[in-house]
Length: 233
Ligand SMILES: NC(=O)c1ccc[n+]([C@@H]2O[C@H](COP(=O)([O-])OP(=O)(O)OC[C@H]3O[C@@H](n4cnc5c(N)ncnc54)[C@H](OP(=O)(O)O)[C@@H]3O)[C@@H](O)[C@H]2O)c1
Image 1 (cartoon, rainbow, N blue to C red):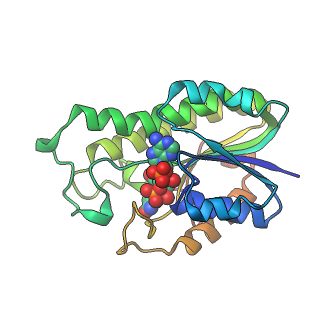
Image 2 (cartoon, helix red, strand yellow; image 1 turned 120 degrees about the vertical axis):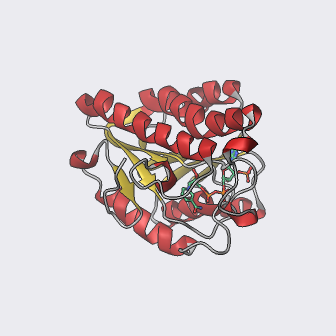
């Protein structure tokens, strides 16, 4: 039975990832601070292990290898993320402009979007089997080539950092055959994406599950979209 560890399982894309992997027969270790009713309902499945904790808490992350002792991971998905001050759901496209700079906001966004996936990947690496897959959810908003409207400095910069981080991991982990990619889910109707987004959660997940399933070592180091397209850094 393959095993996946994923973060941000409470709602949005992470909740649906959890549901999908359970449906496909995986054992799922799913991180949530306070599990939602939907996540608790999935908890009836004995293959789901809820891992309760705050990903901004360094000690929680340091304790993860101990909590998963004896397990071998086939897949790690760093999914949890934040945009900072509201999200697309509640604000316009010009949020987080230059005049709005707030050091604490940058700290929070970078803590969760960059430091956390780096920290989780580092601590769980010894549990990952050779040839496994390591994915961090990125965003096309982190693409410098595709940067097309202003604002969202912290979020954009954090996802650019994720892209670099995953590319570096692909180089370091090549000898173990571990495939490291940055994955863009599309603009999706979650709390973060808002009701005006392009994609339903199901559409994004249909695409991402297919992408994840089809990953080969040739894909390692790439920035890939939900539909399988290679995206520019
Ligand atoms: N939706 C989009 O259009 C879109 C587009 C591009 C990229 N992405 C990326 O896709 C990923 C998932 O996005 P989403 O749309 O599903 O977001 P979402 O609906 O806002 O959900 C975010 C998830 O992250 C969790 N989380 C936040 N802070 C946490 C913390 N300190 N500790 C533990 N968990 C925490 C949340 O848990 P709580 O319920 O406890 O807050 C929630 O489960 C993110 O990395 C995002 O940047 C999304």
